Length: 169
Image (tube, rainbow, N blue to C red; front, side):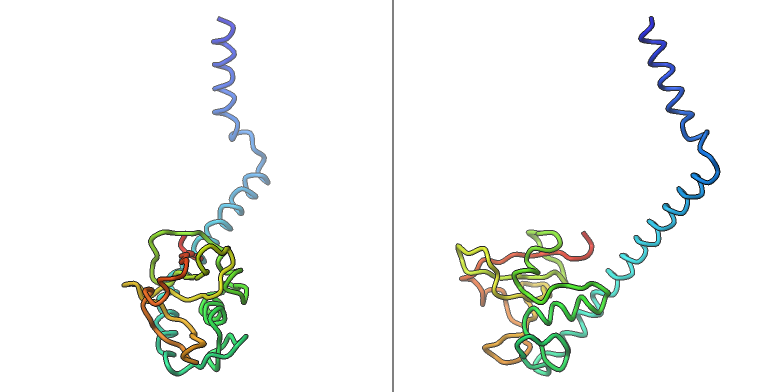
């Protein structure tokens, strides 16, 4: 009987817990909720911009040269292209394929705009980065071609491939 009374009291107290919050705490709680909502809306706006930015980067094919350590439309390397693309939606990524490989969320089914990184089989350091375009195609700054190119993932069939989702997790 005592345990039933204790449980009943605990339930009543838990139900009334929010009723005794001072006005200032309620205002703080409301401000926190508003801030969280603003953050979510900002993330959604950034996610909505991603397809347009990826589409713009595809217009740079054969127009933006491969430039070691570059990260602008006047010239970029592989990780610089990825860094540039995400900087356009307010996300700062490191200028390293290996560092980019360890960000965001690893996914097995890539989506348009995901980061694709490559490592030699059996290695844990990543040597190349690109952006996934769908249909097993990527856009990347290719040192061999000395420009920005779209190519199939099959060109990297001897590499370990990782897909990384930076936004829209």
